[in-house]
Image (tube, rainbow, N blue to C red):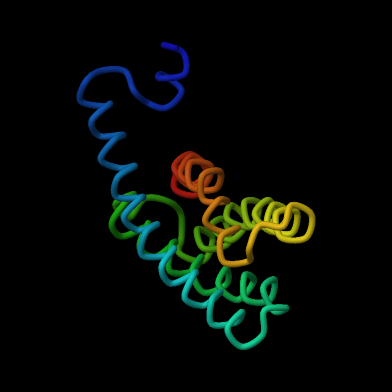
Length: 141
């Protein structure tokens, strides 16, 4: 357990609280992005339910840019490389979880019968912690 904490940069009480604050800020940015993403997604399925994958892709493009700029400003305190390099890393980082989410979304809707409106909410349990760690250690590391 101690090795995991050290890998996360947690070596004392202060660094633990700093990690927790950072995760909470990331979560707040995530709430904003989740609302925006779901609004875009639900707009597409309101137009035509068969557009659920297109809506998910459109939401991804818009909210990753937003996540990067809010993350850079409020979560990771301007850390990282140049804006363009950081934005590219952010799209790559979120792209991995996007592909995972798309696969899970397809599996849930097409194979498991989960409603299109519920499946993306289930995916958040996997993608939020994954995105935090990748952004903390790679995009802004």
